[in-house]
Image (cartoon, rainbow, N blue to C red; front, side, top):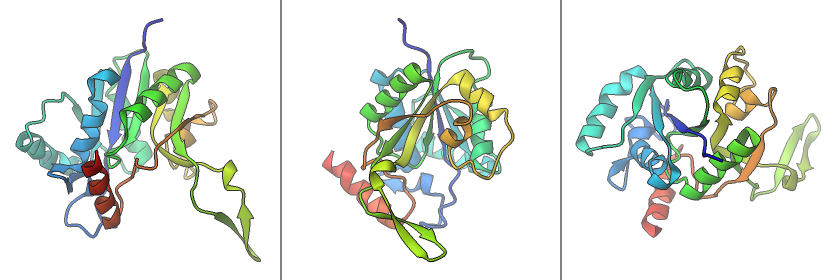
Length: 227
């Protein structure tokens, strides 16, 4: 059985507000290269066989990204697509760029998760090829409590998962999901798809950080140096 076509949509719409930085967090330097470039390189590993890369950015960040690609001599072919008013709209715009393809598996990944491993990417693509929809997730390390009118109550953390990306889907399934109206309950692509199809969970990686705060940058640098 042949391996389905593989596509990757890297969504990077951050402003860097929580970072306290003067530029979007996807462009912050991590060991000499922009965070987003580290992420693109992860998916461009030859062993993964990804055929088409789509980077989704706010249109006013296009010039900055093109300048960074020139400065760092980026030779990875990729399309740059304008984001929308929300993550949902941005992914939908990225999907439109794949309109000429009729089948395959598409990964949606946070552009500011630059430490994702090839193993997690491969396992999520493979699981989506088998199950139709698969996402990376990890077990919470800390105790978890829910909120109530009386205060709070314990939740069995073994029944919970912290969701990461990549989130991989059959291309036509994701298209069908994104034809539906946007809802305020959509927090990621799995929440967009789950009314149409069950979501299979793949073991993620605690090192697969989403760069959100200055502390995340320090930890990401330490992890990259250790590699």
